[in-house]
Length: 254
Image 1 (cartoon, rainbow, N blue to C red):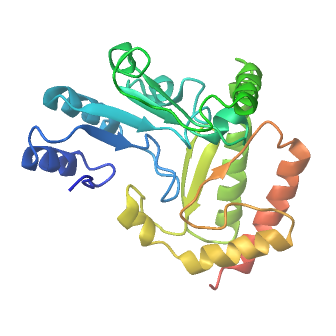
Image 2: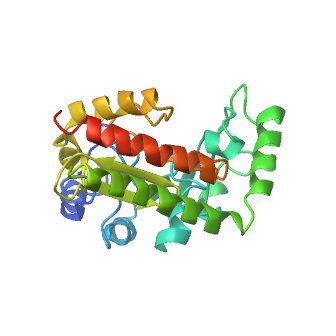
């Protein structure tokens, strides 16, 4: 089997797989903050635990930061959590929405990539000048003063959603890391995919549709995440506040 699946936030499940497949696991790939089952934060020692297991077993640690990259911090998961991966992958956020991707890591690994080393990596659009120019322009916009602004806007949207749910007497579990966030219609902590599946998805779907009718669009799936950017002005957040208040009250009986 080429891929083995462990439970997110469950370091023991990772240990079991490594033990059962000793010397046969090349890398552990993880979203440092899960974004494809809703926004789920890593438990305090989960990422560090993965780092230690990889060191013990001679296994690479790869952070999939296609979603978290530049959203949770300029330096990604390493800056936010203090855990260093061996390789990191980035997606279209690098190009401000343009189709672009990148990967990078420690020099002792990257030195194996051609032309420095024997591992060939190329493609028709590799180094595409339009995508690369877009990426450079995005990086120039990510100045030090941007992230405090994103944190402030993210905190405000978090409070807007929490207050709207509370006013409607609806229980939600809310998770946020910087400008990346999400909520679940459940009254228990959401630590993994099984927890995420236990939420009331019918209520989320109804909320999504009600928000649209009130001029606010969020990700259409209960298993996606919400992003906020510097383009979201105070007026937009005020509109969102009104829309969330109406939407939560409208779905109370769903």
